[in-house]
Image (cartoon, rainbow, N blue to C red; front, top):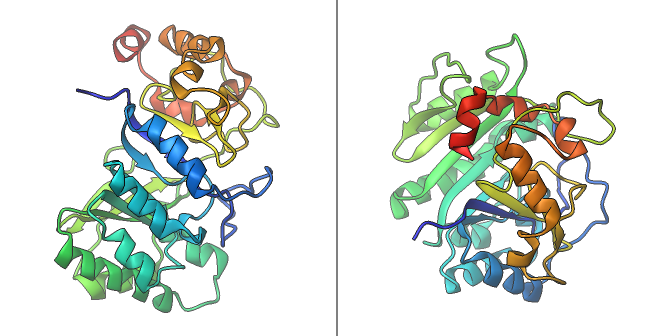
Length: 299
């Protein structure tokens, strides 16, 4: 039976070891989810999600119980999708990342040089490449993405530095060619290892001007987010919990998703309207523009 959401983003921590210019600072109180709370969240998410991402903001490998959280998902038979900058890779969490419950691992390679432009990126990539080699051997079914999500307008080569490209080429024999991210965002390197790229975007914020009242979005359709404090949000870009649908520690998730606010958001998107102010100030939603007659089909 098909589940309601393709993904549910569970923020196991909103703390990160990096501070990238393209990833805004979290203004909420810093928090790490407890094992008991995650178990509570997963028990409610499992019937609704095809897979869970241990990420919304923050670096998942920074959590001291990361490996236990992987085992918990395996126990509950929940497929996982992990996104990390990879700087904290060690033997323990590398072994955890090879767990069969994990479908995909994304390494944000653009993050290291953004934080340490004067440092040698090769030592950083060495750990990621070592894990990747091990995964290609032991988990050929595991998807791995090397993310370069920092493409700037009018700079088609800006998403991959010469050093990173050279190291990928030397390690995997991959030759890169120009690509249009509007048409195709991934290039296969080998097996299920891909170079994944995308352009930068402006995170939605209540401090920004309104950019539009019309539009549709995949929030509450294909995914939702659950912040480390239990706040349920309709979108993985609502980093501050502005659109607070309820708290999963206080109410059942199914009831939260039936709340008047959630229903109003869904009803608005069905009509091609943004009912929430944060949505009206979001430019990312423009990537989902479709002709009005098609919006009803997608809803």
